[in-house]
Image 1: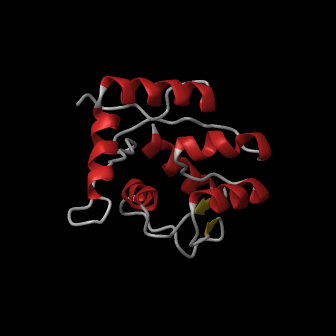
Image 2: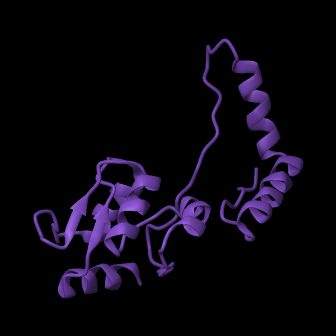
Image 3: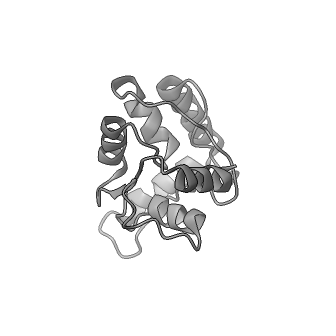
Length: 143
């Protein structure tokens, strides 16, 4: 469980690298830490950067981090990291496609969103997940 894993990291003082960038992943991390504020602890560091750089820093420091799985899988061949693959509430990372109303390309945006929601679009997402990651990481929602 991710909550138990974070508790163990804090108790043992294992190195942990945070994005600390205000992203959705960072907000989930803060929620997992809960009342524990690891900032200022010698084992805790912040990058203030995106997922890719944070994964690189975690690998260099031989540290734990909370990562978006698709980015981890993309960079995994170049990094000395092991997937701890914990589970727990709040670890779902939904992505949304929206067309911007009033945009000069609104019609194209609507067409893209409609295609992504179609059976053909959902099948394409599953296929590209398999090609890129060997598994379905981004699960298309039913329309």
